[in-house]
Amino acid sequence: MGWGLSALTRLAGSKVVDRAGLRKPLEGLVTAGTRNGFRVAGAATRSFKSVQKLGKPARLAPAADTGLFDLTPTEDQQLIVETVTEFAAEQLRPAAADADAKLEAPEGLLSRAAELGISLVGIPEELGGVGTERSVVTNALVAEALAHGDLGLAVAVLAPSAVSTALVSWGDEQQQADYLPAFTGEHVPAAALALQEQKALYDPFKPAAKARRTPKGYQLDGVKSLVPRATQAELFIVSADLEGRGPALFLVESSNAGVSIEAEPAMGLRGAATGKLHLEKVALPAGALLGGGKADVFAEVVRLSRLGWAALAAGTAKAVLDYVVPYVNERVAFGEPISHRQAVAFSVADIAIELEGLRLVTLRAAARAEQGKSYAREVALARKLAVDKGMQIGNAGVQLLGGHGFVKEHPVERWYRDLRAIGVMEGAVLL
Image 1: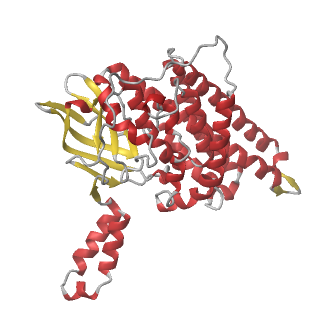
Image 2: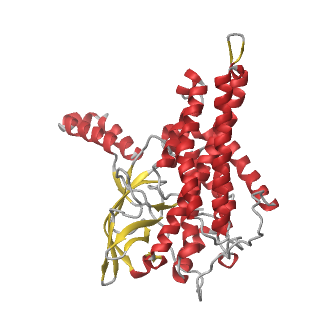
C-alpha cells in the first residue's frame, strides 16, 4: 500500500495531471487508497521444490515424562532464553515505536531474527534442523522473551516458524520435502498461519472461507484477516470449510493465481504488518491438504496457537511490570514516591500476581502438550487468563503512569493496544 500511495502522490503533484483534466479522479483514487488500501498480488515467491526424497514424514518424538511437575528451564533452554531475551532488548525494543508508526519492521530486523535459528529448534535433524523431540515449552519461553521486547514484532518473527512447525507435525513426506528445506537455509521465507477472519465472535472451527473438491484437487474462496507479514509471505497455511468435512488446512503459495493481499492496519500488532489474504477461485493440487483434513489435527492447531498467544501475553505483561516498578518508585508526588501510596502498591502487586498465574498455567499446558498428554483444559485456562488478565495488566500499566500512560513517549500505551489483540486473534503463531 505504501508504494502505491507514494507513486500516486508523486503523480498527483505533476502539472500534466491538470492539463489532462485528471485532477479530480486522481484525488479520489488517492483518498480511496488511503482509506481502503490497495490489493496487490501475492509476494513474488521462490520455487518450492524437493531437494531429497523422503520415505516417510519426519516427526519429533514426545518429550520424556519425568513424573515431576518442574518447569525450571533446562540448561539448554536457559541459554536459548538468554540469547532471545538479549536480542529482544537490543533489537526489538528500540525498533518497536518506529515499527508501530510505519506499520512494518525496520529493514534487516527480521532477517537478523531469522539468524537466531528459532525455527530450527522445531525441525528434526534429518530435515536440516536441530530438533530431537517436541519443544513446546522451549517455544513458549522464546515467545515470551520476544514479546518482552515487543509483541507486534514478536509475531512477525514467529510467523514463519508457525508454518514450519505445522509441516513437521502434520505434513506428509512430500509436503515436508517440498517446503521444509527452505526453512533451514540462510533465507527463511516469510510465511503465515492464516486462521483469522473479519467477523464478530469469530469461531475458528466454523470458517467462512470455503474449499470445494475439483477433479484436480481443491478450489479455495474467502478472505483471511490480520495475517502477519501478509504482503511479504511466500507461503500460507489457510483454514477453510471443506465441503462435507468441516474445517481443514491448506498449503497456499503466494504465487497461486487468485491470491491477492490488502493492507489491514489494526489497533495493535502494527509492527507485524498485518493484512487481508483474498482467495478467489484459488486452484490447489490434491497434495495441498495438510493433515489429511482431520478434525483432531485442526483442533490441535487451534490449541497450540492459543497457547502461543498466552505466552506472548505473559511476555508483554512482564514488560509492563518491569516498566512500572521503577516508574512508581522514581515518580514523586506530594513529597514522596507514588509507590508509597497503598493503591499504587496494591495495583503493582496485582500485576505481579496475575502474571505469575498466567505463566504457570501456560507453561503447564506447554509441558503436557510436548509430552503428548491431553492439554485442552490447560489451554482453555491459559487463554482465559491471557485475555482477561492481559488486558487488565495493560490497562493498569496505563493507569499507573497517569498522563504519561496516554502518550507515545512511554511504551505502555502500545503494550495496552497490543494486549487487547490476545482476545481477538486466532492463528498466526504456533508453539
